[in-house]
Amino acid sequence: MPSPLRFTPTPIAMAWKGPGLPHETVAVPQIHFHEGDALVEVEYATICGSDIHTTSGHRSAAPPLVLGHEQVGRVVAATPEAVLHDGTALAVGDRVVWTVTVSCGQCQMCSRGLPQKCQKILKYGHERIGRGWELNGGFATHVHVKAGSGITKVPEEIPAAILAPVSCATATAAAALRATTRHHSIAGATVLVSGAGMVGLSIIAMAVTAGAKVVVLDPAAERRAMALKFGAVLALDPLAGKLGDALDSANLAAPAAAFEASGAPAAVKSAIAVLGIGGIAVLVGSVSPGPEVGIDPEAIVRGLKSITGVHNYTADDLRTAVDFISAHWNTMPFADLVGPGYFLHELDKALEVAKTGADVRVGIRPEQATD
Ligand SMILES: [Zn+2]
Ligand SMILES: [Zn+2]
Image (tube, rainbow, N blue to C red; front, side, top):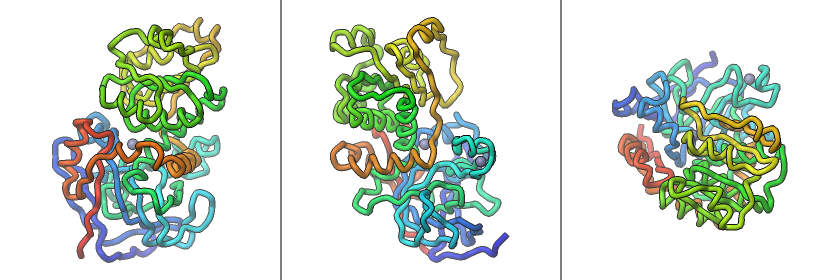
């Protein structure tokens, strides 16, 4: 192993010790760089739904670990081999986001274009602290960004709170949109989005921009109001009536694409059932075990319909997400999605606030580390 490097001030991370336990502050005085690695000082991080799943004990994880995988930061050190996703050299001072996954680039999954399922995969915010990779999550002053991460530069003028969610929610939304373009264009078509959280709202923004008439289902009135602000033509409470009837009375055709971002079994069922001829259901929200959902195979066959799953994303999707946010951050209400930021040492309080869902995202700002 190469000799460790020391940085001043000493990087600190918030170590999660298990469900119900408070975070502990951990100083990381030594960083073990390998070829292609870099150290990024975190400017802003946001709490993703999967962080809350973990702290609530709904997702298996081996503590201690550093949670957080939505963050933006500035490169403070880089090995000579460190590169951006486009192959150009990573430089100290670059403002960057990076993929949630670290991929080997050589295994069967990577070769098939599925780096998010790499056989040697590592994920930020998911790995046990240790083995020379302590700063491996966003709830820290710094992140040790490993070779095999897809790193993308981001514009200086975009507020950090808008950029942080790009490396999970927005990039996942870009992957979901890409899944439909294999089939047909959504321009001019009806598109259904169920679940108007961060991923759903990002899908709404992208589908509206692509020229779709977007119909949104969400039981929360404030999320429906936000969906309309992002350009949805209709936002409905799924419990309030039949979707088909609502589409008919609004003179909207059956959806060409239905994005399911809530994970609710009833929403999955209705996303598949409501599809028009040639339609595709893109399932994004079902990330934890749930009941089986029946399908009508004849309707799939005669209707030329598809059902696909999207989990995480590729470095190209992250690039697409950054390009999208760069073009639309000041014309669409992305700034309204992140509530007030908490300091790193207030992480437990911030997680409690995030659990209430009052804001789509809760932010974490690392205070100046002291030595
Ligand atoms: Zn996430
Ligand atoms: Zn691989």
